[in-house]
Length: 419
Image (cartoon, rainbow, N blue to C red):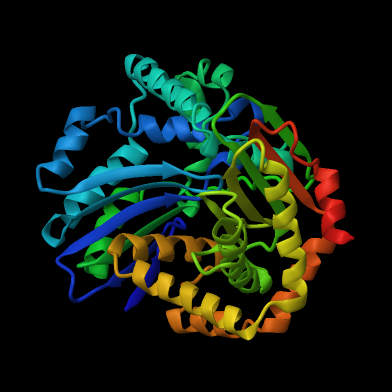
């Protein structure tokens, strides 16, 4: 059963008890990520996530790790474009300890200057590693090409020059701007007691004063092309189309469409381009969504000699989907999505994540049956219409990396889609 309580200062607490579990996942989701940064702050949300583990007023960095690992637990965090999350997985008896540690790192980081310098070096290494990983960095370039000169289009890690300059005041300033109680969601799933968590949360977070959240700038799609020619073994291709946002009913149609097109070994792109033509090892399609926009992403890697064929054939398959997507393909895609959702939610960590994200988006946590019904409501004609819209709309972005001199331009790919 899912239970929800909102403290007087606006902090929301959502839990789901899973009777068969001996463990629990508990965390704080902060509704602030990369897209909430100003240009001069780019990378600060991610830097802050790192610094949360580097010491508080009560615990050193080692003591934070030991507190959880001494009881056999696990603690981690991540930063996305809209969320920063701090979470732990522990046995049921250690839930109060986990909540105490998480609240400590979120509310009481000391931002010691020596630790800032150490972690700065770690993040710069992370940036370097990302730059050396073509099938990672290309998605940052695609995001920037889709949303140029906007916070939502900037890299989460931030540029080297920004990360190299952040100091204690920058970190504490971002906390002051974005870590108010109304921007925090405490979510827990597994072997949990809602009333106990609410009581402890009141003690730990109840003193926070409510304050208005700073809204992120609205996203504006402005698709462009990014092409970096470099001598690599593979030519990397990523193409984006503006898709539905979280609140758009077409989100489920987009998910069914991308699953049918490139969501598994039976998908169109996998069968036509990898299995029949042997043009690549990896190819996929996916639908990503934000509060006010979304992106349908296609990705593949191939040789420099075959990049043009791969790009053109991908466009041909997208165009064909608007005319002949079958009931069998739609039914298979719906089954894949529902099965993946249900299998994923066998984990308390996944359930805690789902509750936090849905509460942030809709202000409630929809039943799994409600979500399954929306997936089942997607029709063949709806998917064909969606495919036709993508092909004719023109709001596309392109990122190419590696031996890509012969790859078609974005304009040429758009033309192939619409002719």
